[in-house]
Image (tube, rainbow, N blue to C red; front, side, top):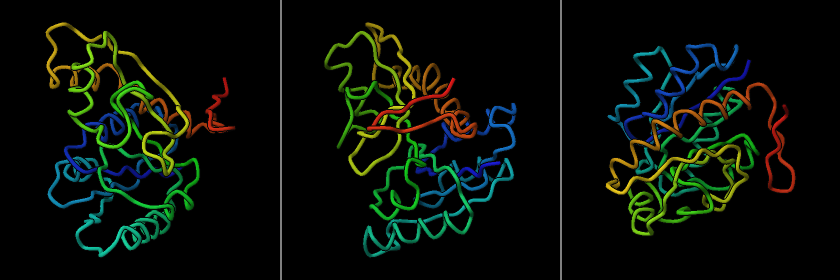
Length: 208
């Protein structure tokens, strides 16, 4: 059994997708045992409470530096004996302390097909605004391992989603969530829980 922590900053739609997947038995005996929010009052915390999952708020403003915040985050994750850290809309920066404590054990879902529309400044609706401005015909989502360079870690899974001519950033965001993010993020967690992911030379290899 592996213990999973999900880090959130907002409504927690990806958290809900993971909770739903766990309920189907997708993760085997592994469980989401902790939800950490970067600010109080977000709906993701209610989702955790409604499903009997322990939660904690680590508000960035309560720490005087990224280093102090990162240290507190590592301590919280270690105390909970976490095996896998999932970033699900977590918008707070942390430093190398976290990467070093959980090498190749932090994953993130990004709402585009990396390396397109990723990196600094590409989050939330900004990603979809940029995709529509460029006129791409296909976008999607990527699950990748988190490294110090933003959105540059080894790619675990990707799924493409059609872009429609009348799309707005909001409609494209919703379609990518439903058709891609909510599918590949639970699948990536399942692969990790089954010990089927290996990282070599900045590439992910999935055991069949």
